[in-house]
Image 1 (cartoon, one colour):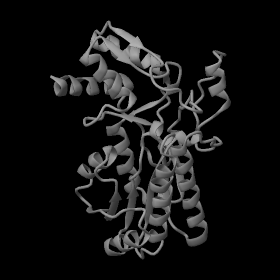
Image 2 (cartoon, rainbow, N blue to C red):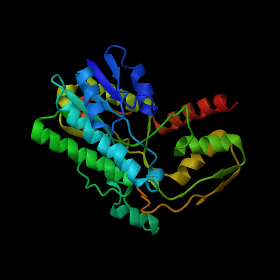
Image 3 (tube, rainbow, N blue to C red):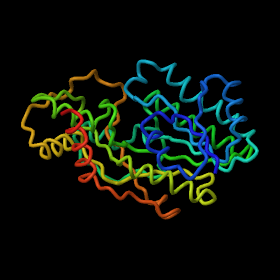
Image 4 (cartoon, rainbow, N blue to C red):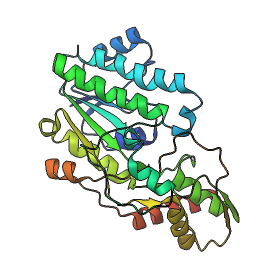
Length: 301
């Protein structure tokens, strides 16, 4: 297939391109906010599949750069969708969405108030209540794709991705942030200890993309969570990393500004995508953390 990819230089894009050698790859090199340029890029590529990964992804930053996140993530996607529906050979528009679109749920208040709660994961039918500018824009993109499908028969697939780890080029996100701080010294500065998150290794996420591309007809106009159902608190995650590293330093919690609308629980199940195309995560959290720790040990040394 001829595949047009946006965001090819990002975390997911870099890994995905390495696995697509059997396809013809076109790298999107236009400003998504420029409708005319985007339209010309899509027209020139004439793709069978569009994989839309490009986005500003730092949720925390979206609270301070609301207009920029909306412009890039939502308006940019609208421009790409409008251009895609003119592509004569398009078989699938694969969109990278996020678990953050679930946002606030009653369970969040229970965790925040130290009340008992059920660890049940969210699925594709869970009502979304996005609670960050980043998440609002992503949900808007999902709804725009659904509209484009109804109005113009645009074939789409939405992946609501969870916290993916295994980065080798930055330590902004929580898993890599905890590991690199512990490797660098005896003091770790983190935000909230209470929030629960589920975690997926980058290798498994890339396998999900490959499985989707191998089953285009089965995933048409479907939305999938990728799981896995392995939610744990950030405090517990830090404890696991410390034990693996033999680290006995001090963790300073709440060292970052309080985030408006903090989400205390995000967890998902991969049941639907597994039953639809057979994909499921293969790397458990214990193994994935070992792999990530080993990389950063070598990198920092």
